[in-house]
Length: 336
Image (cartoon, rainbow, N blue to C red; front, side, top):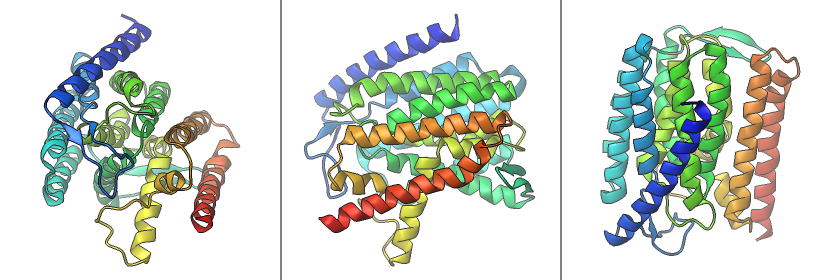
């Protein structure tokens, strides 16, 4: 079966499965009720991302890398554990301490089984030997991505749309490392997220839920570890494909820390929240994040193939885009 056929099959299965999950969520009152942090005003069915998780895990089992059984198996098991915790959180609102404890344990096991980032190649700078510091960087990278992607599931279409493009990006870039398992995992993420997006694009009829947002965050965190031997471009590529997710989370965290706010309390101060408050529709903001993720995929591809301009655009252009967006959002706030 060709990759195109698998992609189309997974997209269709995801779309149908999400529709079925939505009916079950309505029947059993599995709803996301609006609160002060919400971007919706009426109770919405949630947990649609369960289809993404199940189909990606099945695909991962079918196409598990026989030469790297440990990495494939660890990804499948730990991804399933995180999804289970996310599902229980969707239903019961678990303690954040419990969630962080599980995430920390998952990060430690991932490092023991998959290794850690030892060397990173940075555009315009070159290779940096991380040494044992790479262990800490990898640990916080995994936990950070799990939570950052969860935070980005805040408006209709964003988390699913970014997952489609980032998954496609990993499909393209996996050819550089000749890793078939990464290719199939990325394909499954892109296809199932596309099927889910059929129900989640504004106006959304169902939400993804923590069951999938944490799973996707973990997937995008460990794909660089699975794809190569912890050296060279893997971490940089993983960072670039998630640059909007990372920047929005990191800059919001830093801004709240400087203001003396409780950085662990709920809030509506992410860039996408500010743009919503400024009058932009969910669809427009999600499309912007999707486009900027696609731009990062293009720049990553050009950089990995030796393009001389791409490093400059990555190192200067992407931060400049973020600064301009932040200034625009601040201007919108002042105008209110």
